[in-house]
Image: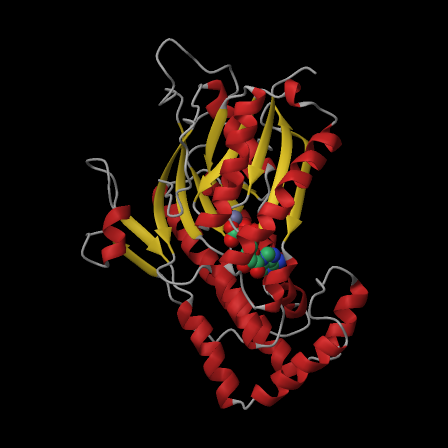
Length: 408
Ligand code: KG4
Ligand code: ZN
């Protein structure tokens, strides 16, 4: 089979995924098994996640290979998520990938999950030569702003080697992050508070379109500052700058909005209504369903009053506006030539609408992954592995999970 085929494996949180990608761009298969079990608990339970990954990994990899119509002997490498993520969950993917690479005599490539999310967009080559880009990675576990710069000097490529034309390596610098909850985490917690199943983001997205946002309900919590190293202990690690590099940061915070929703619920005596709704949704067997069909959404909507729908719309509006403000302020400050948004929350319809409007106002190109590649998947891991494969950046067979792995 022509081209270079990489098998990607992702197991950092609650999705077990395997994908075969040709030349870092063409997705031949991308199989994702989402662990529904966590919806019983209102959030991901790490032990259960590891167990579900163990159950799913063999059939999911097999299915990805079959759908792509390839044999292990057709592959050029196996790529796997090294971190960040849940230690036990990562361990399942890494152990399987190591065994497979050893058995099939293939090189192993370690991929940072956050770089994977960025490659879910870069693999579609939406930016021509534009650089630097401002990349927002916004998901259930992460909310990071990166200044992503093309590195034509091919940093990190062993001497004597050069990458083929059209293959780029990227350098990432973290220029902002949430100081507390990730945006997706805030979505999930507020959804849980309102009696919705986990993950709540897709539900909140679908329900918000039926409410009217009150723009004054939730405060803006934009935190622009110079990284001094003494602002907050966590920041000093991010502030490892090259001499002369601009240290301005565009950090975010979502716990204030989440707490404000909780206070609103108390002050407006909404608790009883939420309890009653939870019971009714469970009785109607709607608590596990995704709002994927108009019928499911219509059935769910009958259990919501206007006050709650307006609250959901107001929350969503505040989260998205905060994200947009930090992203476009950072883009302007650092002279970014394009905007890239990725991660589970990038699937949000209001976020896409607002970001596209802001980008058009700022005259900047903007790109998102397809909805399927926004949330966790292995195609993005195989895509991010492609430049590493060409540069012969292979992982040692002692590779272990790095739960707190950073990017930039
Ligand atoms: O990228 P992802 O699959 O996993 C992590 O790396 O965290 O993101 C999952 C997160 C969850 O918090 C989920 O509620 C959120 O993405 N999410 C959404 C939407 N779809 C998924 N949040 C808001 N609107 C959506 N449409
Ligand atoms: Zn993710």
